[in-house]
Length: 480
Image 1 (tube, rainbow, N blue to C red):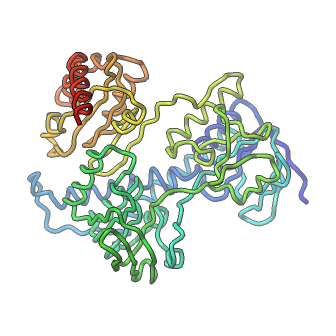
Image 2 (spheres, helix red, strand yellow):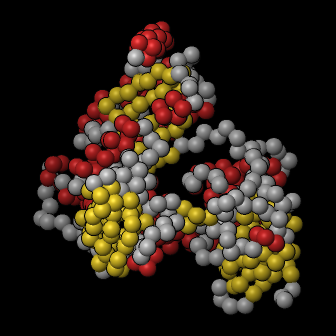
Image 3 (cartoon, rainbow, N blue to C red):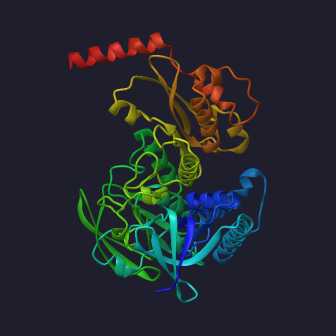
């Protein structure tokens, strides 16, 4: 066995939480090492958030070019060069990796490229990518190993070598007919992008709607968008079997309420969920407990069941967003410095980067109803936000849930252009515990997207009216 090297802080995985912790502690003079198997900086700058939005924007440019005449811009034909799309994405990723390496060098944190496997509670053997092995240990150890795309256990699917988001972002050709498994965030974003590049696209979703946790009006709006984009959506449809090879030709056997039928395509993209990268770590040597799915069990301070070992990000079961991993880093950093930060009560936003975007923070109607929280609802079409008329982007709507008892903002959802930016404004008000009237009465610049929030919150029903409405609903239920 190689000689053991001891560090104060040993971080397994260089994702959002891990790299920020490494840079912070090393800059403070603490001896810190990070073991990374492959992706310097984790998945976000390499294969996930940033690359996918880069490709999605290329698809947006293609769509704008295709409709240029509507804006008074006439082009003499338009073609999509997927090799060029990929080159633009790779150029951005290369720049991100260079930046990360510069930050490692500046901070003094040691980056060890290889695969770690525990051989003792706080000690790992690292099989180095360039050959050989090292044994490293930490006074405290931090796990930030992330997740990977799940491949459903369907006969023939794995043998068909389906695309995940990783391979889809590396395509240098336009799939003739892309079949997307799953109507979640990944499936929706890439389905629309590939359609705009020129693919025929079919989405196969087991559930009764797309984005299954969202309100029915949100799901219906996205379904209508995809219908208008020429994307076929098969809901309540189960995949039974796959034949062939993705990238050449595939045949899928499906079942829905009308019975079994087949669907032919050229490529398959799997977007049906994630699984944690914990199985090969050797956690049985550490005393770190995992749940049945392999996610590391942590308390609200992100400590595992083993003393001196912490877990952060998706492998710890945190919501699967880079911005949550950033907050996980803050929780751990502050607790290492004597604080008492927890993950409890976090207000977590999300944005699906379809065009237009879907963004939400706080409660939606389904959640409020499940928790028996009374609310007032305000909703307006995006066409009432005057900025959208200048952009020819009037599709969608805004909605807000306001407490029936006071003027607290309980939640916000936006399906429309720049919805994510509008959400951030509402989230700021929610974090400040400002009543909705602050936004309703604000003087916001015209014509901006944010100005639409004054219109939305002006549509909030008065509390007395909401109370009368609830009483009427109760009488109706009693009569029924």
